[in-house]
Image (cartoon, rainbow, N blue to C red; front, side):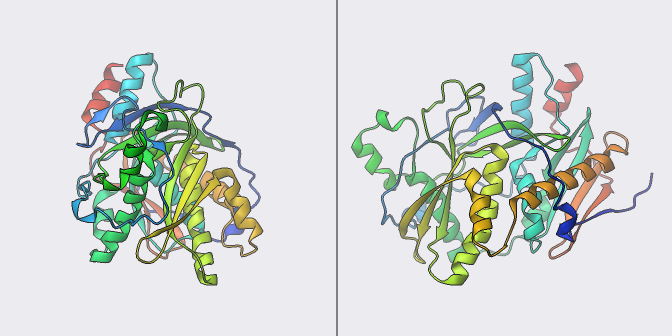
Length: 365
């Protein structure tokens, strides 16, 4: 078999401007799971939190010294997502099928790529039982990280702190005023996560995507999430824009905000605006579906949601077609070099990254 490199051109963007891709919006999640504060996986909604506005003036640096940070050097592959799929198949007796199965983070990189080619990425992909599974190449991700400086670690913490003071582990009506107002004293722990898994699609490419959900807007736990979609919320922090270039930077950030939420069908985004010292100055609630229109009406032409969708459809079709021509079980590398105008696919000699639990289950199913 040829080991040549297959190349996809990102530019010119005009090649994607008139596709009018059909999108299968995630009407409902197919399953979900929770990581507890010790990173143990549970097939339930136990880690789903409710949104409750934080007090303005909060110091997002508070508690930094006691932050319980997840060890990002551990390569978790697609293990959590695959374990949830196995559990769903056990319950339903039906095989979960899609053209592509991956984490939301991988899809976000693809959706934002037409307007942000500065950062590189590497992903691993393999076809098994007619589905292409895509994961991040963990070693590349670790090696590409710059050595963090103290303020960088602190600014990363601000995002987790904002989530902690903006949520409650249940319905707000179940908590006393004292508990609500004492959230600032909670230890921040990013081991705990709630993950939603949805079925969606771009053009003719069917996808299953798993991703973290920060909070739910309405009843918690949602009474019937598989039939009545909950109103999920994405929580973000950003510096309060005051100067023209800061407004430009925020509009660029909104592309990623939109893509992340669009992919999982998250309806609302709450942005916490802070100053240079991490003091929370303001809150803005944004409907996810409104964001492309906000970018369009600004007149800056920094990005176009329709082009992002059409680009994603086209590159997914290319990935599906290219990998589909090789024997099943072939391992591929999907790579974008920093600043490059291309994405490359090449064959790797390594073995499968799919978990043994998933492979064994699918063999006997």
